[in-house]
Length: 388
Ligand code: ADP
Ligand code: MG
Image 1: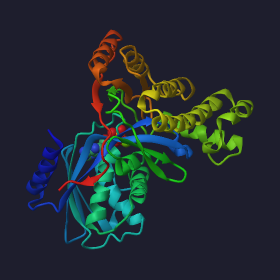
Image 2: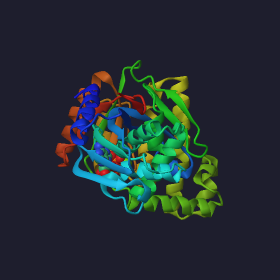
Image 3: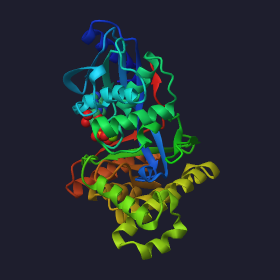
């Protein structure tokens, strides 16, 4: 289905479910993080881009206080009264769209009569693959409500609203990266985000001109953010920063690592070293893109994967194999992307080798008796926008 078909179908589905036309259709993309993993909550740097997989929200205001949401993703229709909505009572998939309404309320928007709305949602962002279907649904709803409620909130602030919804209403302790990429992304470009100042710059990727594509290898190994390893890594980073006497690991430079090795236990040191060197790699990637173009970033992506595998220990056998096999077949750089413990790897690949990389990775997974991965390309695309 083309993206125009999605827009038309989401509007048509709204009409048939709610018995009236939507006020409009808004969409927001998923994202891939090119580099900068587990740096966001350490007030560091990230370099994601918005992808050509999106979530569409058809939205229509009501003249009462109810909010109803439906999605092609689920048979449930969920209805709440906005005036009484709370982060604790929202659950399941509806916590994402309704959490946005709640989070806007936390930002001073009065959830009074006449702010009610109906929303129908559809998406072609794969769920749970590390491509942030969660930010896509949040940001589509956020720009729709911002426009229909006539709020005029700037996009960096809307990104914080999305993060608040995800942290409090959904209960996932994620950073600001995903929503920033989804709201600020631009075609053929990445979003270079300083997670301390929240300042962002658009960086030209130039993949198409260089004959490169990003291949996604979704391992189908599911990751779970709210529990386990992710929280443990955050705790290690906090412990490392405290032991080094800094507010966050953003304040530790590569030159400080010798001292850090003396002060920290081995595991905490390796966690810290990942974050510190990963921040340096993001800066090196931005510099290389600006000065030399995307052919110059392959080795930096490879180094990032090694750091996540050995120092941060968030890779899994399937991700390591995806990276190795993609490089064997001609990818110029590859790394796992996202929070880790599953999800997807990315491989920066010359266009004429995409078929070889795909075939070779599939063969390698079959030989290892791993579940077959899903492999597809994504293109750097525009951020959230009104479609209809
Ligand atoms: P990821 O963001 O990596 O895809 P998450 O676990 O963060 O994975 O978010 C996935 C969850 O977001 C889904 O389980 C669902 O609750 C919600 N979600 C995403 N897309 C949709 C959609 N189109 N309709 C309804 N809920 C969705
Ligand atoms: Mg997510």
